Image (cartoon, rainbow, N blue to C red; front, side):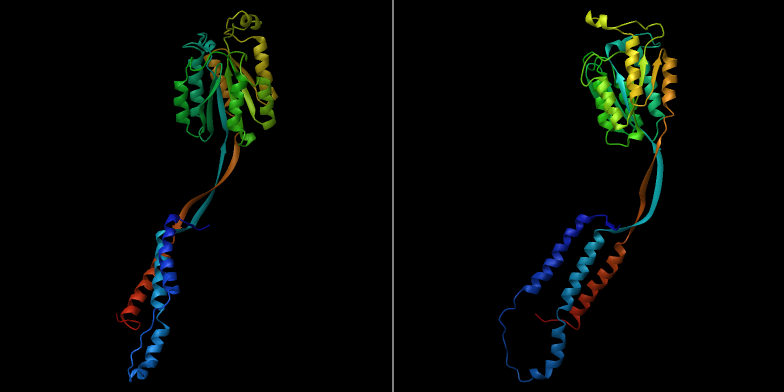
Length: 329
């Protein structure tokens, strides 16, 4: 559809139109007659000019309107190209609780390795919308969905343990991630959850969050981080004793698996840095959904079609006022 490049300039049309209306509705003043015996001899010539005395004003008004229209830069779509792209909307939910300090992933601790592997994953997702949610005892939206992979990578580097009260609020993190994806196509949306423990605080519960994700059609891929020899039978007793378990239990893994399977996603266990890289690589080939975008690449400027007649009319009214329709003071 046609458009104006600077539509606000059309407000200037008030000046010529207002001037025309003011002249048109203005009442003539009292007429003064001078007796002159030879005046009837000039009556025919004078009457023709009088009948056309409105022409210069109309030409001037039309010329100014056309010039204002040219200033507003009328444009017409010149070339429209249909662009098809395959993309996915992904929110990373990263656990930054104190248990991620565990040094069973070398070099560094679990969080250091997770940040590096996820940063590599983000850099390879060109064309996707990526977001980042970090959680411990609470959840925080570190990066809203954005196509800027560099920004997400930089914010991942700044994430550290101690930014939030300690704990593992998996359900809260999932709910916050869903808030970023709920208005986007479900078939093109997913959450990648990386944690090393069980939910122990926050609302809603992981089961409720998983049910909400299933209702929205959004898949959750869960990654449990724990060394190969660190699986212990039960962590409930440790929590009751006031100690923080730093290893995945069988119950923890079962809970994460239920979250993933309930939403159509997958559960992975990463036991070392190499395994974590392989897990993230397995998530990499998620099928991307084709999106059709109609992008207008170019607009043709039409101001010349208004500028030329505007200048011609302006010149015409000047010629008329100086010749055939000239007046005396």
